[in-house]
Image (tube, rainbow, N blue to C red):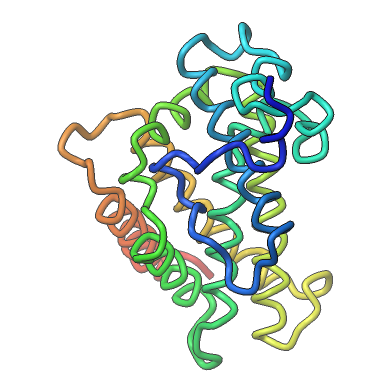
Length: 230
């Protein structure tokens, strides 16, 4: 292994969604980001090539041309490394949510934030990343991947709840509205991602359209149910 490349093992693979350099990064931060991206790419590649059980942390580090110790500075497991793109996507959705107009209803704001994330010209949407669909499809069949995915999802939604609570000027512990809104809105996105990853819709290569249809289902069903509730 060439340890000289340990902190910057090469450019990220072209289908990563978080490869764009961050404004204000210094040299050390840039190299740390590139190392993290290289480890995440290596984990995805190896898992798709050999299966989750056959992949070790050491193999991921070797593929990324870094040490096992460097891996541990960035990730706690191979599953966390492979699913790092979901963490980055959750961060981007929440960043978009923070900038939505203050008078926009919370559910509409979350849906708009998801739309911004998918359409962001600086990063490719999930449907434009060649390996993402295959990896997400494994989440339902690999318990360790599912657990890691759930951890990332819960962390992102907790942050979304805090953002919505701030928008409403309320305490999310005493007021259920932020958690209910995020649970519904993020649940729709999760359902859309899972059905898209499973490939149940052969002509549904465009994830953006698939997600939009899923949100339309939520609003339509809520409207139908409203007269019968109360």
